[in-house]
Length: 255
Length: 261
Image 1: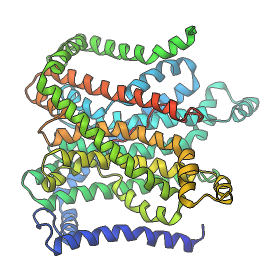
Image 2: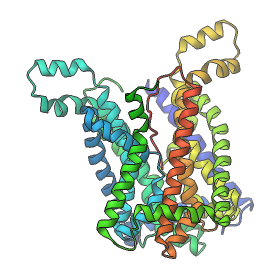
Image 3: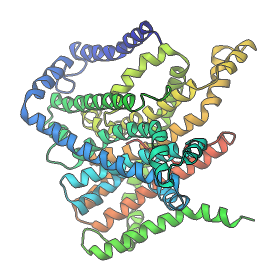
Image 4: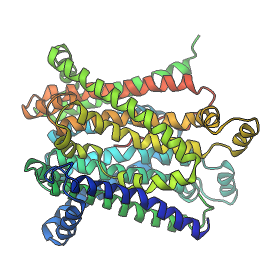
């Protein structure tokens, strides 16, 4: 793609976002919605900018980010290792497959009350929920990535004298990296969403809690601020993951 | 005559269910606390929930909202996704907007939407609609993008108009991918349904679940979890059957849904 086409794509992409902000502003300024229900966008973004500098708000973001990363990391560790094990050994596969089939379509949010009862109202229950939700996309894409590895690569490695135990780490894992990263990307979006929901349902801090407190006191402006923040966090984290991806896949052909 | 192997592979999910319930039972017996009843206790509490007329009406109302939200979302998202897949302009027009919306938890919009539309069915259905549409759009987009150009050229050479090409070439070719998106959307509809009812505590399955939690009826909490879980697994299995009928010609890429929250 030439740079000019990319710029025109970007410009075209900004249009709907700008349009929706303009529509938002128009609805407010023509008086279709009272400012208590729909605050003007300028006010919301001002409030966001002002909040970002306060230490209280930063602590809420930090609490949310901590849970997000803790849950996501657990999901990555378990997802990748179980996925690899299932792809490598038929025995593990026979056990993991039916369990995943049952657990993957289960709405994990419904498990949250059970987690609350078992693990308490602190970090643990939320981190577990995030991990449980992010686990399956990562596990599945690792599994599919690892089972799609070309047999010739494995044979060549074996012919070159790689010990059997190391083939998994030196051949299968690197070859499955693009697929694993795709899974991680889905898992990351899910983590953002789930951590927010868990904080909305029961929490004493975090962005979700901010939204709920604002909703209880009918502070419409403060309700928009956490939502925009989580959207921005999602975009930033996605961008970071893209950077990691292009670094890890620097030798790969275009994927 | 079904072979032994097929029998085993068919009953494997059932065995997995039983195994998980067994682990639960043993874990609960070991922990032995009030807040973690055994699997048998929880299963015993199911009939009293389903037998209660009010909760049954609540659960059915939840399912109705879910069905309406899901169908509307599918009806809007598939054409949009297909158009995005076939036209680069449409794609670059909508993509950034969708990227901004993606990490926002749809159920978190509930408090704001409640301010505008009240706590009724409309708000909850709208949230389900929003939650389902993104994965369906995404998968339809990917499916339509992967359609082979040559087929479209041949279609055009044989005199099909743009709409006919869309309906008769792009739609069938993208169908397996679209159905994958719908499957994700189905799980997601259930998740959004439960969460929206947890937040707008007024009616529905999610409300029963959290009311039981607040009142300390732990058996009922776990029974509700089993009911919602069974809905998820049942709907997914039913959809998979349907998909197998519709696109028997295509090899399933993922036979397990990649669920989005």
